[in-house]
Length: 199
Image (tube, rainbow, N blue to C red; front, side, top):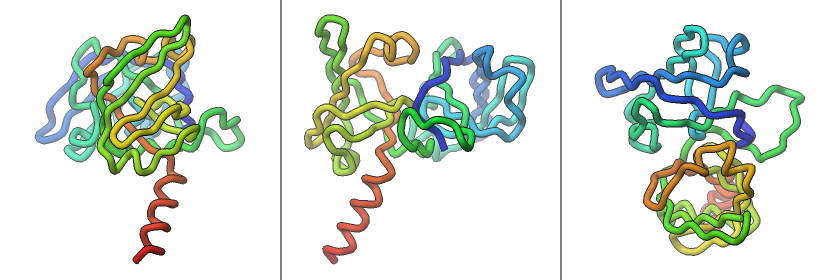
């Protein structure tokens, strides 16, 4: 379980094919070194993966076909930057929202609007995802816990402060880029309940 509060950015050192899967080799932020252990769960762009090797500040992860088909991790190349967050510790403050690290699908950045220091981003997503969103609710974009501003049939918007743009990969994103989307778990349960009541 995660909070969507990004702890830093990692840099991809290598993407090694392993049959239909890939091994992702990342240079991690300094805070991760010395604390992480083999088998730990770490969210990469919001996708929960397991640490399978550690060599100093370089961590290895394996991503299978399901992960590569549902996320933007298959687009990573050496030099790519990735948002990273360690699993939340019991008793820690929950500053974001409950994030499972189970990416529901991808979206594309459709518009970027500037208003002084504020930035509004619009994301194009499949309708099944917007059905699980509400205005002022929570959404996870590339692992970042954000508040929904507007929700339309096949797109939504979020307002970003300069700090978020500075400490996450959203500050490096451009129109057309693919991002990972995880909707709020509460929305999923409500949609399932309503669907069963209507049957």
